[in-house]
Image 1 (cartoon, helix red, strand yellow):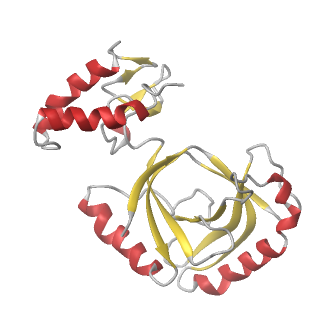
Image 2 (tube, rainbow, N blue to C red; image 1 turned 45 degrees about the vertical axis):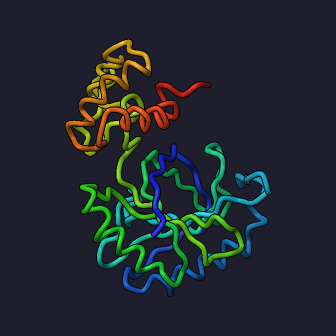
Length: 244
């Protein structure tokens, strides 16, 4: 099972909305896709497209209150949609949702293995890695026109899961830094960021030197040399150190 961690900023989708029985979703979700695909020309101009001119297709799930929580045992909502610009206004007959900034575990699948992959991530991978599913799972279709291939997005954190300064996992809100108004920051941990400011003026190299002993104590790496090599490979991609 191919999986990866992905942080995705808040994004907007426009689609056909429905709700129905949680035990028989295939009965009421397929007509939503038929409706969305059949009338795509109505929103084609506002759809965000890749370099090949293809739209970004999403099946977004939510609880009945539209808080992007998981379905309960009885019912849920589903938006057969494509990604659009945030300022897009919904045409008649279409619904726009703004999906919050989150970190996801992304698992690739096909329709035949969909349920098996879904259950393995929920029942095995997430608990084994001391993670927590914090909301509804979403579907991304990377090959428009080929609904057999799907990427399942399992949300595990609001904002970034990994501190964008030191790379530490932020498993709960208590691990997050704070802004000046003491609200939680979405990108940095409490050791790196406090009351709207970084707690130190370290360079990236100095931050790596600070982190290595903690990583070795936690057993993340076998030795300091390996820890440094791995950190040097991903630290430049963290928000604080990324070169614009």
